[in-house]
Image (cartoon, rainbow, N blue to C red; front, side, top):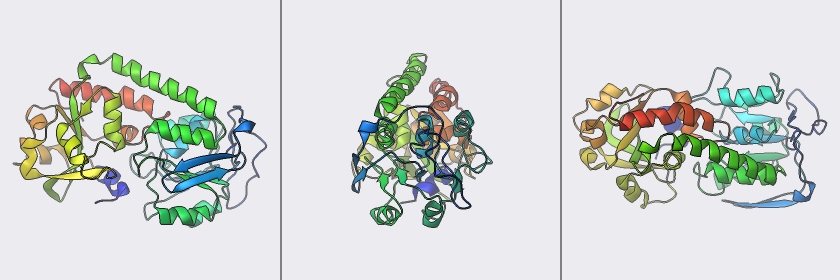
Length: 351
């Protein structure tokens, strides 16, 4: 199975909490936390023990230097008014700063300056030395797929809270709840979840015609179109499609049963005509263009392609809001991606 990073590219302070004055201050290797939300940490929240995929982690007191390893973790941290000391570079769908526009907008609101946040490259795996250099007192990886081996290595640096449900598949609500607990802000996290849920619900209410339509999110290898990659029902993309009111493709639902922990399964292109879905979304960037897929003798037999009910997603920045949903990215998802779905279901392909 391809790595998560490959799929993204192929298709696809705590208490920094804005506790000004809690930071240990800048150093050459460790950017300072600089959260300034003004939101208060619930002192009674500590110690807190969070159960996760690799056991449980107890946080004794409000952290002041939070590093993140999952691509959406920094979003959640910032959405709660905390500036992380370190976060992975967003090397697929990100901007020239190795970040995202929605994160940068929030960072500006929090008063972040250049150099406050270390951006480390995780394209070759978890950059342990770079993370250690930020001198974190908490590492968050709720949106990661960190292995037990890497979790153990990271735990030698500071307490770690990895994913709680599935690798790269923990719902954004669960990520938010766990990070809210870790940051001593469970009440603020609950309020943020309610606000984010309302944002989605309002957008869905404005597009009632898509409710109940079945959908599949596919990916193709530019060098081998003999296989259709399909994100399973556990993956965050189908999760977001369901939040938009769509239902899982029966074909994907059935294939997903073979391995509940997998985020992708394969379907032979020779069985393309069996892909039961009203809508198919696929990545058209990174060398695999829509024409190559639509014109392929086998793939063109996908019913949704024949009916021109597809999104050939070519804007990776917008698509990223669907694969890494967070309280900060959801506005892009509902404003820029959801309309593509509605248009495609009317029989007009979109990109």
